[in-house]
Image 1 (spheres, helix red, strand yellow):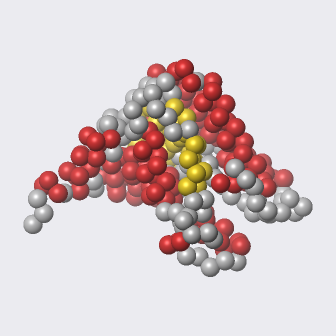
Image 2: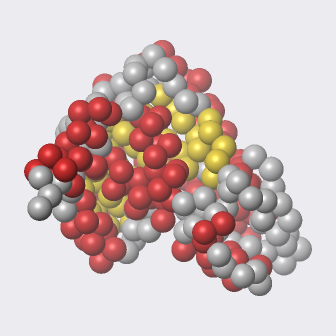
Image 3: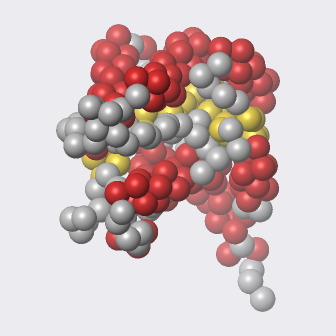
Length: 258
């Protein structure tokens, strides 16, 4: 019989005490699947009170139930972050449920693959709306909370935000823009105690990446890719650092070249 000290809930409590995230209010976007989902679970396990948002309501409800099994707290909130009214409702709900938002993780994103000669401009508009405009606007709305809480903003970017490959010029352009948003924000609020971190994942075993492999006609082997849990662990490590220390940028790639 497993002792109480070795139970999942007791392990989670020990994690909270170690990481010092107990009670911090967090919003995670793109939390229905992939990196956002793993990040929400890890932050909740570490003691943060999490509002998880995305477009897949059943997946968000399942996420909240999974967190509850280890004593974590996740409030699911379906939202389309390209819609201002939805962003406003999300911000208001988060403030009711967690108080001051002190952790904001931008993990929502959309990816289109087309060469520039054929890529519809409508696809560029869609990707800009989701990948740049939505996180920009949500950060702007929540900045008073983040400053009051001396909080953390984490942008889940992409290695395409560092160097663009053929066929993804639109997507890469939005990720370069997202890096610019993060860099400017970091410089503008450096004296407020708010930390800004950009994480640049390479190929990661997410539903989005699986679709990318299909589009490229490549065999799908998630065991060769970065696991979303590894990126979630980076997020937790970044926001759990002592005040006065900041991880500004991290690149994480599969160890094996694909």
